[in-house]
Length: 527
Image: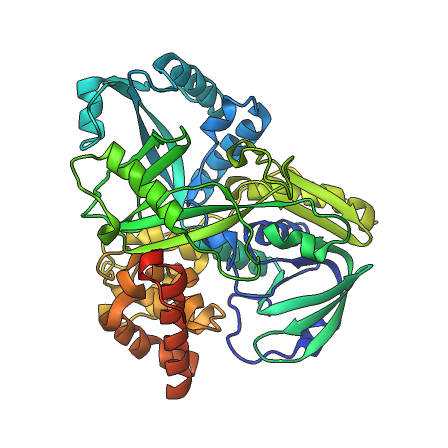
């Protein structure tokens, strides 16, 4: 399983797993992927298993922001913000095309908090942590040129500042790709059914069969589901964040527009992402089964649309403008665990480490700080790894990659592909037919990315391909529609080796999933 690509074919778990591992990492989101990468980089023999698909959980359902957490400054969480700012800068430097700068504009309105002076003080600290200085305040007329279409009543001016955005699922895949290049092993659709004292029973969810694997330490990186694997009382508070996706033409933005919701003062944002406009987020206790797909509620949809109508009153935005939705569950180790007593938005976002017999659990944290979390895991793992004395200082996130030099690529795509696919970007372009280097309308995605993912990226189900390897399922209405899906079939069915019956089954299941979990509640039908 090591090497450049994941094998999409049958797997012999007995052959692959019948060996002693230093680390068994359970969980294929950004936290587990980060641990696998940093362990492999330092010579440890590490295996990662994920019971569903890579990035199936929160790591494909985040707000897509790589940010320092400006709002955490007013809560006094300076260490968290400083760490996140440092990691944001490292990702911007190390993953161009995948992690990209994003400007934010926030209007200052009479009688609404935070005011101008509080905003500028927070940004001065934010800049200092990043080793930068910038002008942030803009008067009313100038600010309206930077954020056209926003509400003007009571507007006194506004601030602009910089954070970053990413494709979160592709970030996970890029981290796993780098880990495999360095000797790590990653398997999707392999579940841990038992774990005890360095032994784990694995079950192959895709091909059947089971095997016992031994490791000097098991790392529980299953996010919001971590309590289910570890012994002892519950320590995690699952919080749901839901989002709307609108076509870019309906809410055209050159940068992010941030606002404080008129109902409760929580931050809400809208920003351009992958050819569409993304709007989020909510922050609510999630009581659903963590093994099932989360989805937006009608109350959450109404809440986000109310924010849009308040901030962009002339656009007349409504439910008909929403092309897709998605929801993710954040793992929070907080004071309100199991009670819902504390305000979810005020729960700490720092990560936590807990030691149990033969197991180290890591949870919480932010997408931005995955590398810092991984290095903390390795520091805590030292007692279980006698004789291992690697340097744990952070280095470059990824090895440098030259963008593919093919003149057929649309503008900006060479950088984008290098960011998402790293050293494989040139091979992806080389494997494409000429008409597959065109973008799919309404997105930034190339048709060639579908062929590459189907051939090389361990796609087991159609939703793996369309919700995580690419993001077409949340960028296009109805999961892509008949025309797009017909061409997806023509490109990918031969690569996947699926029969007509298998394709029909996967196609039906994918459309049902889009209808039941990635649409507005009023449009849903039970699959």
